[in-house]
Image 1 (cartoon, rainbow, N blue to C red):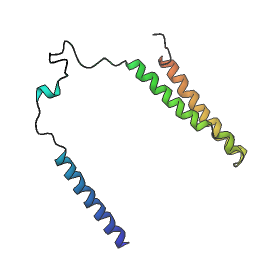
Image 2 (cartoon, helix red, strand yellow):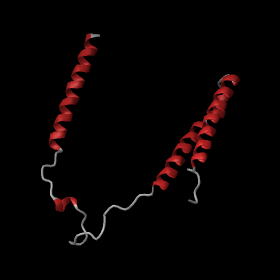
Image 3 (spheres, rainbow, N blue to C red):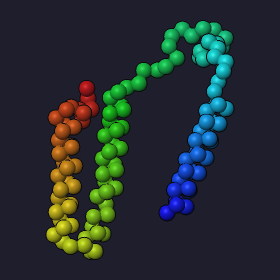
Length: 117
């Protein structure tokens, strides 16, 4: 038990030292306006260098990602059926599908699935 405590202390000390060293090494001391501004053939930029990001696209991509992960959780359900109790399998599957449908209806009511607007 004592060796485990020593191990945690040494690990904490070593990681703290590494974090301090990397923070000192990575500091940029010279901050120049010209280096941080966008470069357009030597001229000052006419407009902003950042393009506006569509929040609608981000929301649709996030919904796709969430439902994609949920599909990967649904795919092993038929395989699990052979190695588990049918009652517990069906109860778990129904609860999981109910939660998915509840989330889908919530997104639908909030208008997140209205692609035309």
